[in-house]
Amino acid sequence: MHPTGGNTDSAYDRFARLVVDGLSANVAVIEGSGAIVFANEAWMGFARANGGDPAKVSEGVNYLEACDAATGPDSEWAAAFAAGIREVLRGQRTSFELEYPCHDPDRRRWFVGRVTRLPGSGPPRAVVAHEEVTARRLYEEERESRRLHEARAREQRRIGRELHDRVAQSMAFVHQSLELHEFYEGREPGKAAEKMELAKRATRETLEATRDLSRVLSAAEVEGGLRAALSDLFRDIAPPWVAHEVGVEGDESAIPPEAQEQMFLILREAVRNALAHSGGERLAVRVRVNGEEAVGVVEDDGTGLGAEDARQRGAGGLDFMAERAALAGGTCRIGPSQLGGTRVEVIVPLHPTPIRSS
Image (tube, rainbow, N blue to C red; front, side, top):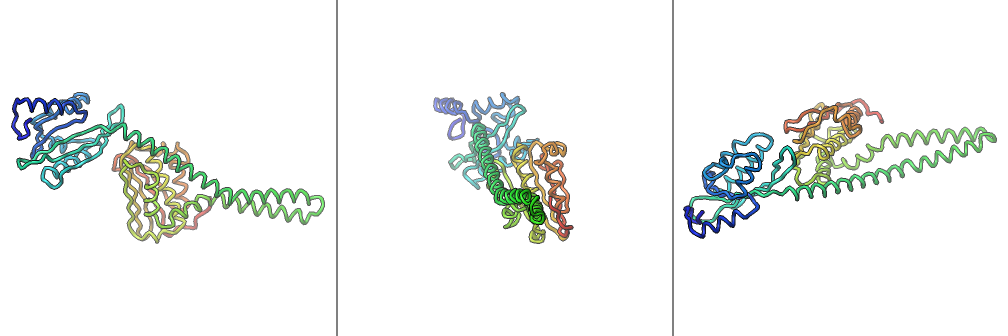
């Protein structure tokens, strides 16, 4: 491939081809129409290694048309990459980069595709290069998993401190009252009965505080509204390779505070489950408020999760979320998502019956 675009057998061209063939990245040069005018050995070898026909991705084949014709779970990425190539070829940008998944049945893989416009006044041409970045992504996953584990540990410590503040001292008071009851029982029955009543009352208060703990802990998180709380949640636990979006439509202040807290707990659990188990690359959370109810939806593009699978996960699955929805007088359903993975939907009325403690 000669710099001027003509094919020659010059020593320069042979040397240039040897250099590009020695690269580990899959490299091709395409012209303005999208036709491939050069592909290095790594480009052709990748097609052979993955069961493809090298003839369909070699010189003369229109790479843009191949991207447009892509089907299956990676078609969106192919379309996005083709759009970036066209922008570069039209001169709207000098380069374009996209990191994308390219999983096979045996393992997960990620690549980064880069497009760079070739300089010069001749017909537009661009260099297209794909390089595997799986090792980096797996390292990032492991690092994010550790960060998530540490975040959960911090939350557990926070719950532990709250339990100590709210429960431990009350239980110490109950224990002291029972000891005094035992001391006075044979001496002053009136005082003994008084101490027993104090112990009963403190026990009831402690039980109520324990049942209310999740609501108390979540109240601070959702104080600034669901949009802010969910955005903070993604900031704290979502790995960088998961594309996520948060949308809230309608008047969020119309949701009763108790129902808003329960809805947040459900959406938070659904997000955590998706990040931990779906293996997806996209996660969307949407809340819509109308005159009668608030609807929250969490969707991912991962492997999918049936209702029975969710139940088998106990408190982390559908049973936990359904219980929370019931406390707000609402419902929670799980099913397939249009993104290809799992969809969790919670509906709570804006004028529910009073929420019972659990």
